[in-house]
Length: 60
Image 1: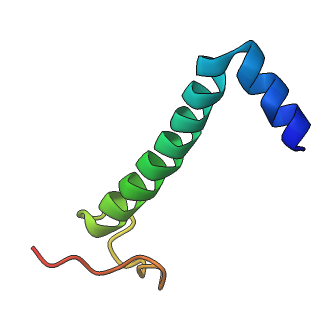
Image 2: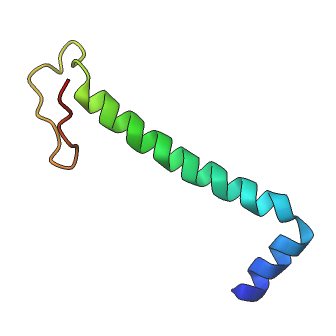
């Protein structure tokens, strides 16, 4: 595994870093967006749905 990572980093040093930053950024954006959506006003038809336990309650 280390040999594979060394080979990838040696041949394209910025590609590995860029992909890592993009993956972490996508996960962070998805998580933050999900929390914001669950804490926002519910769309029509979703008013009586309950909030998942994993989503924290944010006070306004």
